[in-house]
Length: 264
Image (cartoon, rainbow, N blue to C red):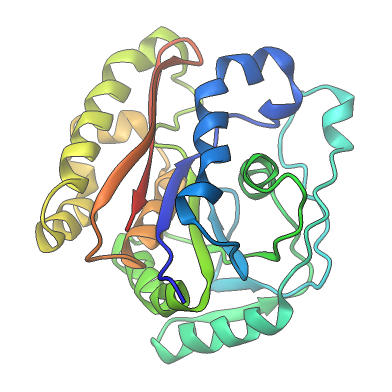
């Protein structure tokens, strides 16, 4: 079986594909997400998402056979709270993956209640609109420790040889208090640093990403790093693989520079 890449994607804002003006603005993002199945070249056995919208005390594994919808956004039109993305879960696979995480010495638990949050179902609706690929999530862990989330990725890495697509879903810039023109300089500088860091040789790349707070404007771009943490896991899952920028856009939300990367 072909070894699959892993991805860190910038997933846009709220339920943007269902809102015409936002969808128009984020058309380059839509194109990049829609291109992912072709880049992979095979239909995955499942997609495992690490979303910037779910964190827990442990690396919780979604265990529901038919996960519910989680509309974790606010002040959007009524129709966006009726969206359905009816992909099946992967409970048997979740149990296996939980075992892999435990074997790596990391805390985990099965969660039968968690459903698809918008960091998960929004990009998946563009990538696989038929909702016919099994989909499950693993949470971030409180505290956002970079090394621990990189270790999570390393624990997940064997899944790439088993037909499981690993996707870290966040945003390369995420500071809700600083969108618009004030985001222009910090997001561009941080994005440029991130691209340069990810282009380094594996050992230097890992060291740079673990030390992300030393990047220019790091805390302006990620006052709380929940949307950057999925990068650590995606990179850990393909630590020796080359990085390729698969989405890059400027002036998003009035001034933000945002990017996505593929590893492998």
